[in-house]
Image (tube, rainbow, N blue to C red; front, side, top):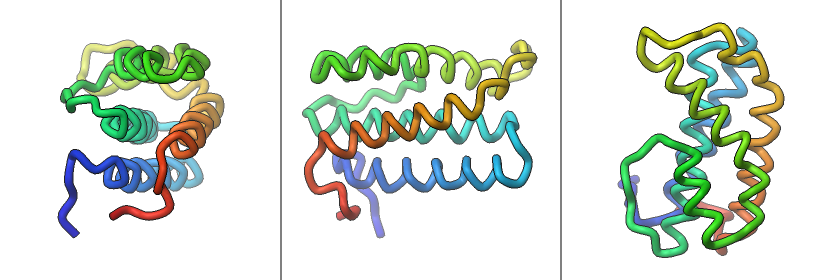
Length: 134
């Protein structure tokens, strides 16, 4: 299957794959730096898929707070995810390159995972035709 960056369903497919991978990592090893990175990537792809469905032109950014701010211009309910997006982005960058403070990375993993799940539910309910990648 060749993916298309303008197809929200393809973003959701890749987001779900990363979310599943984050769950496997957590089940096997508990909170890990890689688990945080994969969880952040899942949230990023869900947000980008939502934004692309709304006509947004793709920007290659990893800042979930930025993406969520844009999402709020389409739907005020995304404000509920401000803290998630800020925290997960901070933890992502802390572990992404050496030099970050790793002391809190993953310490609230269960909360972050639950919130990413809630974010995904909101997004999938807001974008038609999310039952399969086309």
